Length: 496
Ligand SMILES: Cc1cc2nc3c(=O)[nH]c(=O)nc-3n(C[C@H](O)[C@H](O)[C@H](O)COP(=O)(O)OP(=O)(O)OC[C@H]3O[C@@H](n4cnc5c(N)ncnc54)[C@H](O)[C@@H]3O)c2cc1C
Image (cartoon, rainbow, N blue to C red; front, side, top):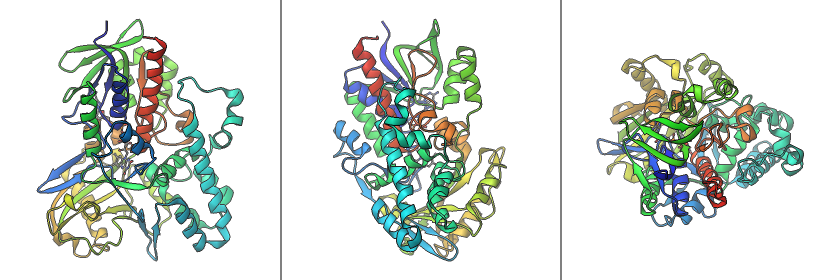
C-alpha cells in the first residue's frame, strides 16, 4: 500500500487549492514545500516594521460568486480572509495625459467609448470576443481527455476561431486609432508580452479574471490567503512537510510511484501532482531519460514568461499625493520598444514602470504616519549575470528618480528598502529564470495548446501556472480545482 493517496510537490496557491479539495473528499494528501512557509509567489515579508507583499498586488474573482470567493466558501474560510475592492482599478500616466481605469467592464467600455466615440462598436466587439473566449474556455469539461476535434468548432466557436491568433490581430480586426490600440494593449504587460505576441485566450484570461467579480486586494498581507488555506488543509487531516525539498520523483515501470526528499526520505503515493516549475519537474525530478523524446523536445522549445525587478520602499509620511494606489507610468516611446530591449536582455532607459502604494489600501503595512511603495518593471533574467548590488542600486536609483515625479522628494523620505530580482524570485519559488506566470501566453502555449495537466508519465499530473489555464492567482485556483476534480473522478472510478 502506498503511504499516501496523493502527494503534491509545492505549496503554491494551486497546490494548496488542489490539496484542500482532495483532502475534503477524505483522501490522504501530503504537500511537500521547500520553503519554511506555504504560498510560493503569493508570499509577504517584513522589514523594519513595514510589511511588503513579494509579488501579488491585486486579484480577480474575489467578490461574491467569483472563483476565489467560491473556493473560500467551500473551505469555510470566508470569515477568515477579507478582500478590499479597488475602484478605480488603476491609473495610467502618459507624458501628456492620465487615464483612470474602472474595475467594472461596462464602465470601462463606456469611458473608452466616450473618449473614442468613432470606435464605440469596435471597443465593444473586442471585449465581447474576450468575454466569450473566457466563458468558452471556462466551460471546457474537467475530463483530462475532453478534446474532440469533430465537435470543437461547433461547441467552442470563439476558441476555435481565435485559438492561434494574437491579441494584436484581434485589435487589428476591430480598432483603427493607434492610441486606442495602445490603451487597449496596456494590460498585455500583465502577460509580459506585447500585443503582437500574446494570444487572444491569454489576454481573455488576464482581462476577464479581473473584470469578473472585481479587482481586489487581500486585507492585511496577501499571504493570509495561502496561510489560511494551509491551516484549513491541516484541519482536514492533510499533512504538510515544510522546509523539505523534493529531489526526485520515483518511478516504477515508467509510472510515478512516489518522491524522494533531499534528506533521503522516500514517500510513496498513488498520485503525484507537481505544482512546481515544469522544467524542474521533468528534467531535474524525473530525469530526461524518463520522458518520451517528442515531449522532451517540445519542452525544450517552450518559452517561459519573463520576470520583474521590484523595489520595496518603507517611507516617511503618507502618500496622499497619489489619487489612486495602483499607477502605471509610460514613456513617449511605443510600447513595442520595451520588448525589443527585453528580448536583447536589456532594460530600456525609460521603461514603463508600476508604482503601487500598498499602504494606501492596507494601512497596516506601515507604522503610523509612514507608508509603503512598490516600484517595479519587467526584467529579463539575463540582464545581469550575478544581479550584484551595483546593478541593483543602479536600477533602484533610476526607479526612485522617475517615481519622484509622482511622489515629490521621495529620495529623502526612504526609511528602508528591499529588492527582488528575477534571481530572487527564481530562488524563492523555483520558477525558471524567475518566470512570473509560468509559460509565456503566446498562441502555441495558451488555451488548448497549453501544457496539459496530464503528463506522459502515468500517475503524474500538473497543477499551477505551468499548466492550464495559466498565471495569476485566480487562474491557478482554477488550475488547482481542475486537477483535483479530474483526480477525484479517477479515485471514484476505482482507478487506484
Ligand atoms: C513579481 C510577480 C508579480 C505578480 N503579480 C500578480 C498579481 O498582482 N496578481 C496575480 O493574480 N498574480 C500575480 N502574479 C502571478 C502569481 O503570483 C502566480 O501565477 C501564482 O502565484 C503561481 O502559483 P502556483 O501555485 O502555480 O506556483 P508557485 O507560487 O510558483 O509555487 C510553487 C511552490 O513550489 C515550491 N517548490 C519549488 N520546487 C520545489 C521542490 N523541488 N520541492 C518542494 N517544493 C518546491 C516553491 O517553493 C513554491 O512555494 C505575480 C507573479 C510574480 C512573480
